[in-house]
Image (tube, rainbow, N blue to C red; front, side, top):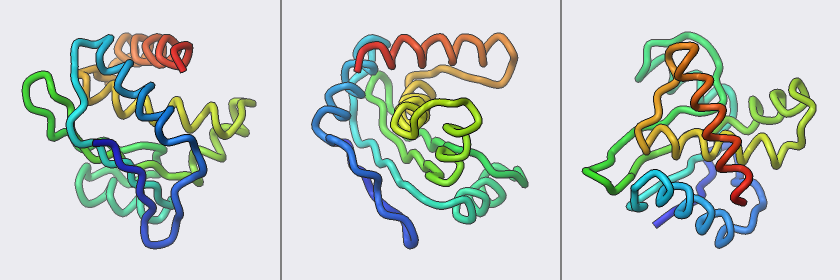
Length: 137
């Protein structure tokens, strides 16, 4: 099941949840995975910074943090998304908020599918896979 939740201070963005869930399942399937329990938690910059410091020991803002609970080929996890950072990035990259939000949402799914993004090569591959996934929507 895919859930779309807000945090204490942020409501989930408006979206066609059934369409988004179908798209996410399709992307996972293209990577040989099935969807288990996925929880999107939409939050603000303060919350994502708190999570980044507490769990990853990083002292900076980010757009998405993924916690992977996958077992074998069934992906499951919590995906925290800062809507403030998504909005700022959309402006910086001259794309719509909706497009940037979809990119960040699928970024978390690709992590659950096993894609890393630590090295320049992995980042390039992640971006390529995001672009492919966005064309499927």
